[in-house]
Image 1: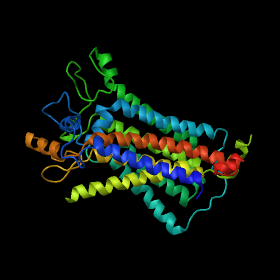
Image 2: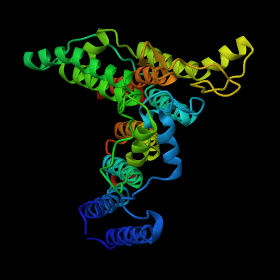
Image 3: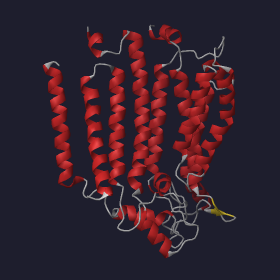
Image 4: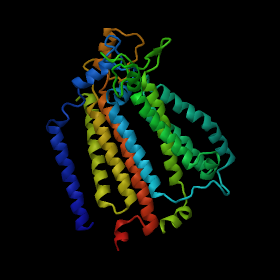
Length: 265
Length: 129
């Protein structure tokens, strides 16, 4: 081992032990703690609380309530960052033609049959995760990640060109991605637009009615919990994430010969 | 030493070891791909730390996920939920961190692929020559 490598190794070990010592002085406190912080107690108390309708969210799942209601604006910008990263990735690949023409070599008939069956099963599970995101663990991002598994399978088993021939072109996927993001944006301002049209007070990212702002998304329908804006946010995030991942995978699966000519220009 | 405390120690020590491996990968490995893998390990370790800080072991019973599971609502069920569910805020923040981390990882992966196409290597020492 060279002196420089030894120096790096020793520095890292010293840093880790220092960090461990600093956190043990009181940074983390008792582990695991008996109680959660007061802020967490408020979030848990107000996730589903018919006694405090003006303050509570509209679903059973506290994480989704925080992500899309209590701290919805954070998540909106996070989605915008993800969108920006995908745009940046496309910009790197500008000028590269993604064609579905030509012969594709796929895997065995067994793998193809299993994948065909999975094209129904996996999106169904993903849709279930997205649509129940306000009731059970899950949500739009998790559902989008699950749905992307089928895209990976199709690329591996049938080939990238087969995916494009089925209509999943770069422009179309980007359109879905943009529609997802627009849907999120529209849901964020829907109550504000309705309030402005009716001459009532309303807020950006308003989910349930508030004092002096009487409009809100429906919480229940025929005894069924709809989740208000949480359901719509999860649905649009599901579309946006699935399309974003699909586009990234499509670009990553491009062959060396298709890209080299453009890169060397 | 009770079981929950011992488990917490094992988890914390494992996370520090993970942190060390990640930092070693970022600083000492010459391959850009290995640097990227190390960055993902680093971000996952930080996320696991955040979730651990939000974990709890209530005085009675076992910890519950932050999902209200009672179909009926009254003060008793709400009190049980608030006194047993783990902190949902770190989980929400980690979800955000995962998405942003993924976006950054995707972007870095694309840059590494382009780097390889231009230089024919992902080894930073060879590319410097």
